[in-house]
Image (cartoon, rainbow, N blue to C red):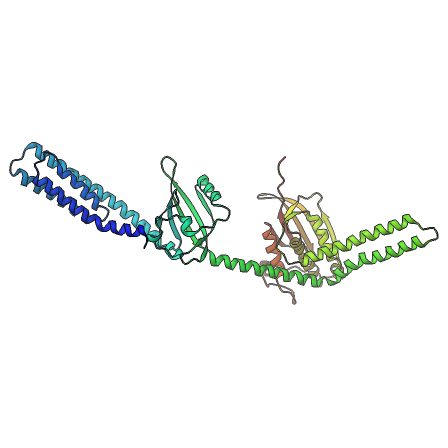
Length: 479
């Protein structure tokens, strides 16, 4: 037990004894000494001392007893001689005792009401504590006892930051500044339990000021989210692994396109190298043509390097890195990676890209994965349809709720889906393909939503589907 709790218990035990001794002393002085003053008024101190430790009936009994003692002293001292001054003093004393008793009863009712309200706070599972402007704990509910391990008697009187070893997301100063500015603050905190273990809580603070605007009390409500945070971390890790697996499966499907994309510039390098040698081996070497061949070799070498870099980025397992992106360029790069796959499905690609689109903020590899997945899905959806098989990619800018958004749509001429399929299209493991995993669209939607956007799917008027990627445009700083 803390020194504060011991002191509180000792005080509760001593008050009735002190009040009894004081009452006895007042009675003896009032009865045995010939003082011409209202000594009985001092009984008010007895009533007020016991007001905090007695019930309503107890306060009434003490008040009545003090009035009886006052009357006994008056009758004993003055017998049957009721002098006006003595009667007045007795009336003043009795009136004071009555007023003190009534005020004590009123204070008791207020205290009982506050105690009942505090009992209601004990019904919640959340940890609720009240502290003053100096961070000293004034109230500690049962939920706080269960969460942290300290009883109310052990916690009250300590500083919150020292007892709980609070860890803030940014800094204590930033949280306090926001609290004083807005009157409330909320965020995630790290606290220590009595046994030394750490707990993550969703914390909400509310500030109360006095009539002069000074900070009076702060109520803090903490909800344990340790298990939820651990589950969310596991879910994020699993989703990251699943995204990587899907990306590698996509690369597996694009093996032929990859070989084609890399072989083209390599073959061009060889051809230009042979041409360069021929120009240099002539009786009169044509240096100009040889230089042009070397420049073409360098250009094709860079093209091959770009293809390899894009493929390595697509296969790399890393967390997203957001940057300013041109969606038109991203669409063009993505189509270059799947050119052979689209050709194998005999798909004709048409581009209708709006020039000078606003930039978007995003991870290039993740958004490229979404475009590739949607384009391959469209090609596969048109596999059983008669030719022509057309894939139209459009880009444009639209007005959104929070500002302009950039829209990229892919429209195919495939068989489309029915009403039920449209409802479950983005659900995990739902697929209309016999050999499909049903993860591509679900992961694509998740990736777009992490970028603050969305994917819409609609049926075309005649046949086929249109998938639209909508992303918020980067807000340019005002000049």
